[in-house]
Amino acid sequence: MTVYISLIRSVLEYCCAVWHHALPAYFSESLERVQKRALRTIAPTLSYSEALSLFQLPRLDSRRSHLCEKILKKIFRGGALLKHLPDKREDIHNYQIRSAKDYSRRDFAEAFFLAKLLLQIIRNLPNFFDLL
Image (cartoon, rainbow, N blue to C red; front, side, top):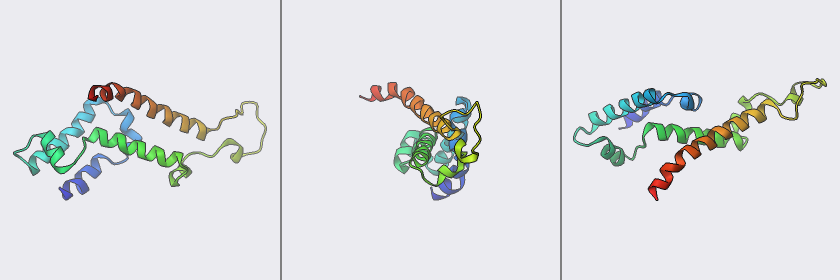
């Protein structure tokens, strides 16, 4: 199991925060098939859901969502990832230009990521209510 997690799953999830939300459903299922095949090789007598629960592994799509949320939380808290966003306009130059707005590119990026996160939460609400 350690070999699968360290060598295969790490490749399947590489930079998932960048491409997860743009991933088509058919490609997501292709990635999930890789995990199914690996678990079938490791535990041939178990079904996919049984193997997931036995090895305490989440589905890859839910893991990618969790990793994206984790990265967004780090960005909003002002962690080390915040430095990768562009600087605010007033930090770049002191010129008075007509098109300057009260918001910066960083504010837009934060709002965009927050909107994506809220959209994903809203999409998962029906699944949440089905569990109740």
